[in-house]
Structures are given as structure tokens and as C-alpha cells.
Length: 82
Ligand SMILES: [Zn+2]
Image (tube, rainbow, N blue to C red; front, side, top):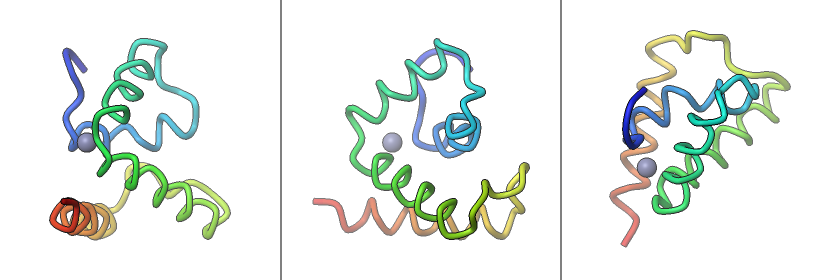
């Protein structure tokens, strides 16, 4: 990863973040993005809830259908954010 995180990149590294395997710099970028992006804060909350519900992290890599589901929810959040 280079430069600022995009929302898509954040969704790609969120499991690494939650597992604590991101580098210091990547974690910093992650928090920088969260600080300015309410959609991703909601996304992170949803991910934590999902993990809590499953009792574990989703398998990595996330199956494409699950990722699509998450991304479509994510897009819905963005649409409802005013
Ligand atoms: Zn974002």
C-alpha cells in the first residue's frame, strides 16, 4: 500500500487490522482514513459485529460472494449517509 487509503483498500485490509497484523504505518493510514470517513467507521463496526457473531474472523481470503455482500452493504451505507 502506498499513499492514502481508499475505502476499497480499507475493506481489503480490515481483517489484517482486526488481527493486529498491519504494520505501524498501515495502521496509521487506517486510522487516518477512519477519522475522515464515517462510512468506513460504520464498516469497521459492522465487521466487529460480524466477527463477534461468528466468534472468529471471516476466513481469509474472504470468499468473493461474502466480499460482494459486504461491499454492497457498504455502498448502501454510503448512499444513506447525508
Ligand atoms: Zn472510507
